Length: 288
Image (tube, rainbow, N blue to C red; front, side):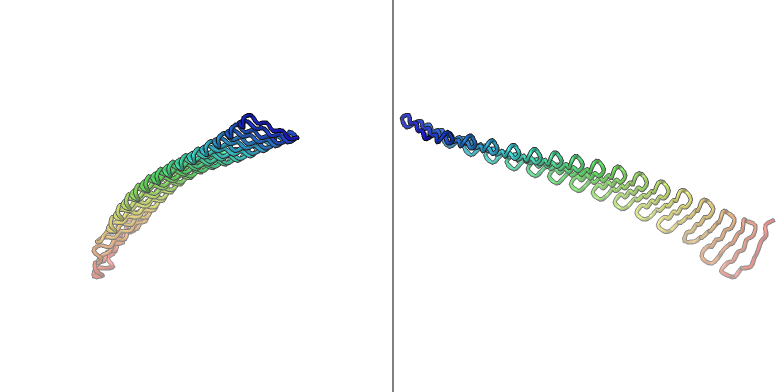
């Protein structure tokens, strides 16, 4: 049941009914086996291996390299605390090189890479991606549907399946497009353009010039509020300056006011009524 072998105090073997074995070579090498279930190997305290029915394994080389495996499900590797790797049934993986480089993968669905906090990449099954270079450049993509790019907060681009796009260069230039239907451009708030499927357009240059067009039917032009023109399908025209106001419907009816105290009415150029400061009124002319 019990056996002991001693060779000049160098080699020792203990066997208890073939269940427990211990080998010691000058205190340098040790092996413990309990019915083949538990094994421990130590070479001068430098290398250690523990196996419990092949389920749990630990390897340490002078405390520099460590590996833990639980039935091949959980693995951990550390090289002097510099490199770390964790895998749970190949589902979760973490790699760290002195805290500089990190990679996390959950069944290949989620990945995170960080290089000293400078570069980061996140991917959720290739659906969501985030890249940050020292907080200067950022890219977000959700299944190629949503993208955001920012270069130190200066340049931004947002695209939702190519439907919505926004570009901003330090807040100076902005462009928005919804499937090519709606567009907006602003250059430092000076120039603005809005187009909805080419139906509605508005242009403003520092609030001085404005143009609105609804499918070419309605147009409005204003230059610093001094000159305005409205046309609805070329049927209704309205012109106004500080001294003159003219309204025309299909060129048939015209009403004009000049210098605030005179006004003229014309119906198809046939009938005209003129009044000058209310003094000269009631004059009617019929053009044959």
